[in-house]
Amino acid sequence: MEKKKLKKLNAEKIIDVLNQGEKYFKKFESYKEILSLIDYCRNYGFEIKFSPTIVRGLSYYNGSVFEIKTEGIKETLVAGGSYVFNGVQSTGLAFGLERISALSKLKSKKEKILIISLEQDKEAIKLSQKLRQKNKIVSIFYGKPSKALEYANSCGFGKVIFVGEKEVKAKKFKIKDMNTGKEKSLDFSTKI
Image (tube, rainbow, N blue to C red):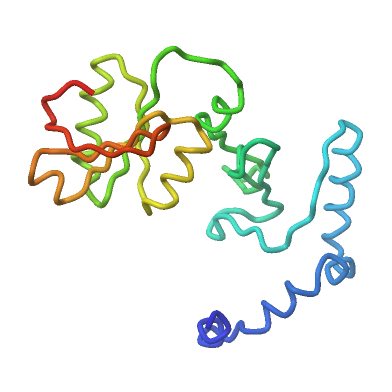
């Protein structure tokens, strides 16, 4: 299926190239930069894996791109790459603060709540603001519910609130207790 999509762009051979592994890229001059980076990072005790399939911001990155991962969490902690800014070759990165805090092992007495927006972003944001005003720890997940629940489990959220069209119309939100698996429906005015 993917090759059919790539064929429209006359790029169907790229999958075969990427499947050849790291040895294929050794013939390119720019691969020497990768080897240099790997050696340098080893001096600091980091394990570096070359992955030609990582793609980030093709419209502005012009060199190496990277992701930083660690044990204890599936998701990427830090990601970035090289680009030109005001004529200067630069490197930028972004941290996943929630992911880093999930790894920090700091324990809060407050329960963490994850709001899952089911294409109801405005209402999800309103709900998060109201809960934060009540001194709750709240995050919002935009995307597929299955991925959101996976994320909630990996980051230790105690409750998940689903905000979809049906919930907004009824002014009742489905809340799932991540420890017991039980779900209940609560009127928005009820204390969570």
